[in-house]
Picture 1 (spheres, rainbow, N blue to C red):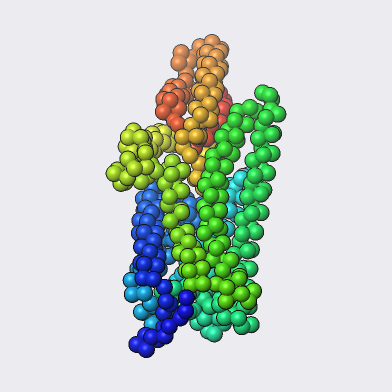
Picture 2 (picture 1 turned 45 degrees about the vertical axis):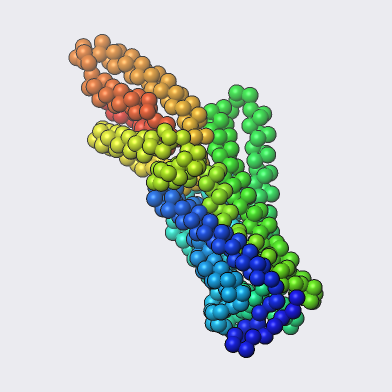
Length: 468
């Protein structure tokens, strides 16, 4: 292989068979179309579904945005230049193309690190992380990630390294082939702060996630009906679901690292002074593999994330068949959620006048629920139902005991005063209890159970007021 100069084109070409260009162009086109469609579906599903629009999921959306923009800015140009077998968009086009590839690639890696850190705090410090990650804070973190990525993508415009054609000379990247102090310094710092440090942070986070899961399993295994078994069951379900989400993130990270490792090896080989050992194929193929990392997220989340599959099936029914979503899950989700919201609204309006004294308590519980929702946003609804049913049945039993105790108290008071055949306390409490029991019979979520628990705890205060 040898380089040839072309008089009409300022950029050189490489002497390789035409089918090499066409093959790489076809692969890039397939990767780009798959990445654009898949990441667009991720963004569409997470933006349309209210249950998915949580602060933690904003990191997933940002990852999909960076992958989508990577495909949009790289695929059409790379495919076109492959057909022409040379770079045809000039020096400024080369710089802009390489800048976009660097910006979105770096931002993807930093976002993966953020996801790992977020999972680390949620799993290893669940109580401390409740309510910490708000939407505003998530936006600030993502803004910092974009600024950090921009800071490492701009230096080649100002003379620190440069953006030049690479591989088969049909795409551009930063200059890692030139053996000069400036280029070598930029290459080493770039890999240190963009690849190795984020990779170390990710490995650190997942090491302690593994340890937290192991310690929790051992602790729960030692419980033999003592110290609140129901709490242990709920915590175990929660940890299992969090671990499920952590495994998804871990798979994404591993695939991303595997995708960028060949490219990193090529750049570090040139950094070490062995650039003459690298052929155009050895430069081009790793670049194609690196760009293919943009298709991993939609594939993994479409296969393993039940809420994502349900949201896609709900808004794009034809894809529900491809994602193997049961027909009942495509239509029952929206109607069930609307029923639960209407029930919750009616319950709140009916009991507001009778429970003004408990406003402070309910308000505090509502705040904690909102934090709990942010923390538990990624949990699978299917896996959390057994714990919800268990708590619902326990509350149902507590309600019956409370109703019986209230009836005895009111009967004794009636005999003493000979006035109350049916006291006002009964008329006020029983309709609320009946409506609450009806509400429990249709509740399937942990949030509703928390609301009911706070509602029940407010009853004794009102009974005491009526006994005066």
